[in-house]
Length: 158
Image (cartoon, rainbow, N blue to C red; front, side, top):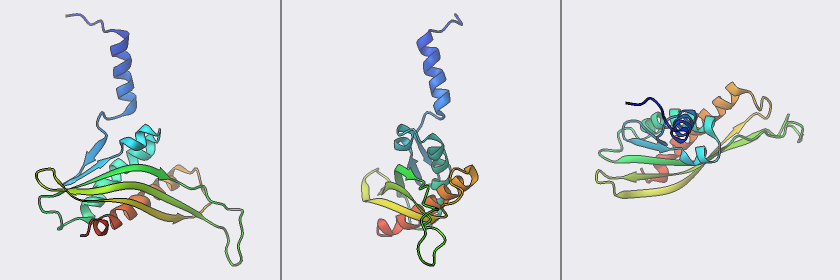
């Protein structure tokens, strides 16, 4: 058995390790979240955070409502707005920022047939100061995930 591998195989393996897990979808108790569109857009860290936080939040939002059904979500974009801290309006300190998470959510039965589907754009207001701070950005993405999970059941009629 030879320990020599081709350059192409080595580079493919290295690229797979650098990209993270080979799968794009993450699941948690009846929930499947696909973040591959985020990864395709070069939003790797955002995709990692959404893949970590959104499945349990959706599972919590749909608790007791699913039965044998499965909730699916595909997140297309996450936008963290830098805001306009220098714009002043009467009686306002700054204009703030509006973040958003855009995707779709659908419900399938035990046989994989789609029962309901909806596009979903969830937004969250955030302070304009601190843009670029990692901890604040994570907090803002988590808030977007919470808002997406909050609205998902009603968008599917549950």
